[in-house]
Every structure is written in structure tokens, then in C-alpha cells.
Length: 151
Image (cartoon, rainbow, N blue to C red; front, side, top):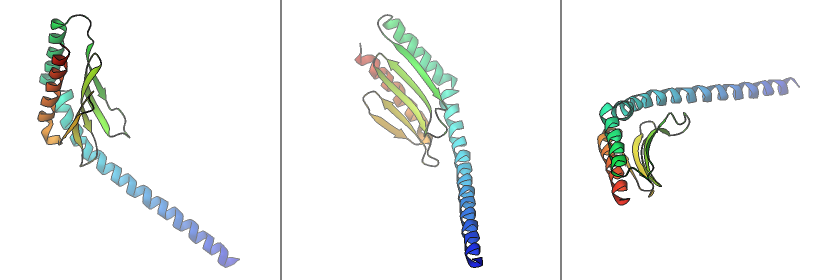
């Protein structure tokens, strides 16, 4: 019986140690990912969300569309922020015109993070974080295409 109790205690100790080590490893990995993502999110915010020129361009586009077609159209922009800490999609800017839409989104995946331009035709294009200006240009061009196709 003495040998059995010792074996039982050894198993318990091993299981507790394994669980503790897994938790520590997971916590370290999450901390590294958060630090890496913070730099990416900061760059995204500077280039899009907090960029006065970009926001001005979006507002000017919206005002122009409303001036050209003041009735029977639904135009609006949506900013989605911190959609979910567990999801990859961190932030998105979307433009809607009637049933069509185009989105510029930041997808977080640690060092594999990217910026995506999606539209209602289910077409998408991915860009590296360093190519954010190209992604914004495609986003704005797709907005113009949607408007042009509906007029």
C-alpha cells in the first residue's frame, strides 16, 4: 500500500508540473504576440484610423457621392475597432453603397499579420503591413468602382 500511495503522489506531482509548464509557456507566447501585434496596430492606427488625410478623403468621397446622387442611395462608412481580442480581425474600415461594400481590414497573426481589402464580390487582396499605402489606394479605387457601376 505504501508503494501505491507513493506512485499516486508521483503521478499527481507530474500532472501538476506539466500543467504549470504548459500555462507558463502559453502565457509567454501570448505576451510575445501581444507585443508584436502592438507595433502593427500602432502602425495601422497612424496610417488609417487616426490619419486625418485618409479620413478627410473618405468624408470627401461620401459628400461627393451624396451631392451627385442625393436620393435613393445608401452611402456610409463603418469603423470597426477591437472586434475581438480572440479573433484575428482587429480593425476594419468599410464603405457601403446600397447592397455593395468594400472593406479594409487589419488581420493579426503575429509576424504573419496582413492588411486585407475585401468587397461584396468576395474578391480579396492581401498586403504586408509595410504595403499599407497600396492597400488604402486599392480600397479607395474599389469605392470609386462601386459608385461608377451603380450610376
